[in-house]
Image (spheres, rainbow, N blue to C red):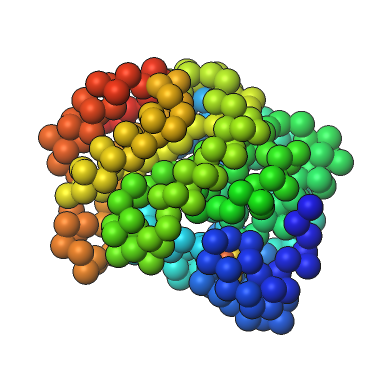
Length: 287
Ligand code: SF4
């Protein structure tokens, strides 16, 4: 199992920085081995089976190993907004969310560069009697061998599949290998947990499984169409997919295409392609 020692010569993610985070060094994710948290609380904006009626017990981790230039949570991923917290304190917060607010799950948002901490945290929560599903909400840019170690800790995976186009992945995240790495990671997640156990449109708390998120980028409809093609070819029509329309320019972008929101006709084009491919468990969003 990946242990705290993994931070000493960090290769937790495909960036393989090889630096000692326990000595205070930072790699591409920008975080040392001190666990930095941006926020903890109930979240009602996730998919209906994740937020349910009581909310999702969400932990936002500071920093990010993928660091897309257009990140929708730029302050957290690039500017490292947050504070260093102990596992005990986070476990206390999450315990209270479960006990008092009756959240449906524990939702780790962008935990990829803090996985050893998440394993310890999950174990502590189980010891406290917290029995709700644990959810890994990731960029999809993950190593299969690391995912194998999450198998007994994760119940639900909600990976992004952001880029099918390696050139776009290179320009936006300096990760031309994103498409094949994310696809292999999602394959491992599906091998472990199968598809989400409920329809993405139902407000019934999911217990296990995988669904994929894809954010449609303005001016990059071809990327979305290729992404859906790859997903259906790899996983079939029953893969649950959330096609997200909410892109907004969180900061001024060098790429002028990304300095606006999505047009209606762009989203409609992606949706009609998804429907033509025959996806059976799609979550669509209003613009
Ligand atoms: S988790 Fe951070 S330091 Fe470790 S390999 Fe990934 S980007 Fe580099």
